Amino acid sequence: MPVSLVVGGQFGSEGKGKVALEIARRATERSVTLVRVGGPNSGHTGYDKSGNKFALRQLPAGCIDRNVDVVFPAGSYIDDEVLFREIEELNYPTNRIFISPFARVITAEHKTWEKASGLIDDIGSTGSGVGAAVMASAARGARNFELQSVLARDWAPLAPFMHDQESNDLIDTTKMMRNTLQKRGRIIVEGTQGFGLSLLEGGYENKATSRSTTAAAALSEAGLSPMDVDDVTLVIRSFPIRVAGDSGPLAGELDWKDVAKHSGSRKDLREYTTVTKKLRRVGEFDAELVKRAIEANHPTRLVLNHVDYLGPLEELASRESSVSKFIDQVESNTGRRIDWLGFSGLDVVNEIEARSFATR
Image (cartoon, rainbow, N blue to C red; front, top):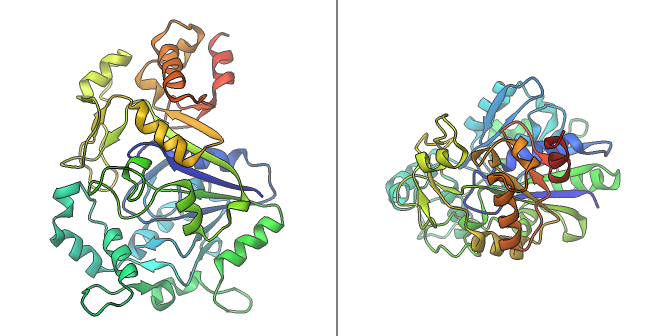
């Protein structure tokens, strides 16, 4: 069945949103639906067809062209202030946004709890309230836990997105997506963060996020079956990043000036987080981490972004260039062929097509 999963293979900011948008644009099905799991604790960036840049935290980046349905399933955590701000920013048609009554709402209390918890300094948390909302959900109303979980069905501002326009009944997003699949529509599930931040599989103990970030976990949060999936895309980047502060180990940590030297770029390559606007940490490519991500996600497609940090696309014409050597080394060390390459924030290209273009 036509379901695509897009997940990260490092510590987030691999370019998943851009890739989900590319998959949506390449889809040949009659309709496309974007599903956003997780919450607004990280940003996804993409460019619309007019070249306008959008950094989204709640809406999926794959919807930037404003021509797809958007679903927030039960496994999503919603900050309604962020959602409404992004709807206004994109001028997104609200009749194409659907929210499960069982999605969780991030409240002011959740954000306040996180700020007081010390997690922002201790693990580099964004303090967006997602972790607190996850904990409140798992606590199930326990009397000795101070935070309460709030369902979308009980949050009045979200009511317009949860009712069938004809019957006014609450929407069952799983049933809705099942109907989409039966009509041969494409569903794209846009995951959050990256494998190294996964609570269960990442291996970095407390320096992790509050959820599992694998393809299987994203599918579970979406409310769909493994039998529906025909496409799993794992996105990685040439120089992995972690957020600022004491956010956990980063193999071969570098200075951003070192990254610029690799490409000979005179540009300021420093990256800042979408949510906190803090300078990201950056490190050398860690093949062992990516190999574990590949084993856990078993992708049908592997995407390598930020290849321009090593050199321009034209260097693919030479097998002796720094770009070609790096790609060959990644493929050799991970045991997996790279399918798509990203040389900019605008799009990705097929690896074979890219080499052909570079030799023209």
